[in-house]
Image 1 (cartoon, rainbow, N blue to C red):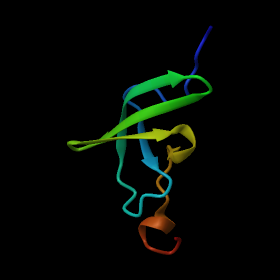
Image 2: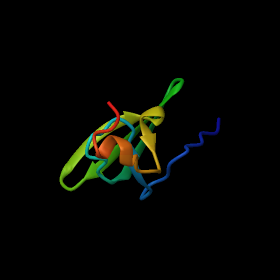
Image 3: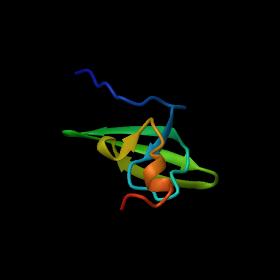
Length: 68
């Protein structure tokens, strides 16, 4: 079996719904069943997210409060 992830270790990403659009680094990728879970780090905080929650582009509209 072969697993492929969209984001690799060390990639810089943003959370699609983060109002601050803080840049995060992918620090771990977990494969399980039919899903993939990414651990991302921002400063000293780590959080886990599914692939569809991550983007490589900062959304300035969200950061400026123009989108909810």
